[in-house]
Length: 250
Ligand code: PEP
Image (cartoon, rainbow, N blue to C red; front, side, top):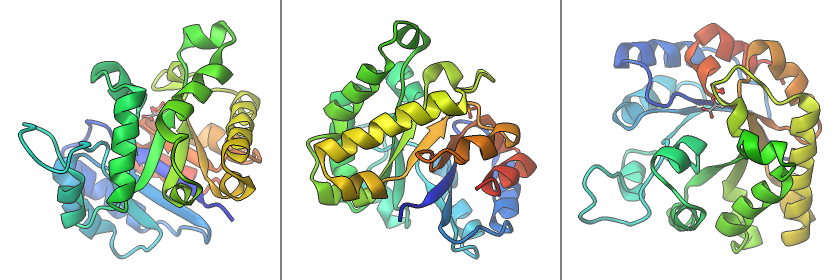
């Protein structure tokens, strides 16, 4: 069966000492069977934070991005090989902030996903619509397009390495959360797409996370929905007690 996942996305936050103390706290949280906790850590801290959480087999770290090429003249970039060489096995791709600020396109993300899968990484792939798109009633088609352009020419076997995070842009960092019903209906739509495009097994075994102002007060209700398998959490993942409560919300 698919896993429940509580993933934190630290983004460009926390000084190292703060990151260390937060991850020490998380490493002491008892993670239920069938649940996985993932911390999306800034590049410079990955190796050390990985050591901090090593005592808890339920907790893992992820990079927040990677480059699609194996090596070369790409100043400031980080390759999958570099990440693998320090033991990192998970990468977040397609976050709406990277799509907006770094102009990452569906096509570029398709290349990054392929490179990551080939390098044996697990990918948390983010998708989600803007407020304008939702208000126009085009969110189902928009999200479907993002998935189709970046993921749908993969093979069924590749999906063992993919987690989808549905993150409506209008709910990220705004304090506005999609209602559990709004999130459930689009998660169910994504799962149906996986079934129709790949097969029943891919649909049933792929974890689909919700992201957008997840907090202790709403996590339980969101995670209780049949097609919501956890959360990708920004702001609340920076607060030890809040993230602990979210981890315990399954
Ligand atoms: C995110 O960073 O992916 C996110 C969902 O942020 P927040 O929880 O702060 O809305």
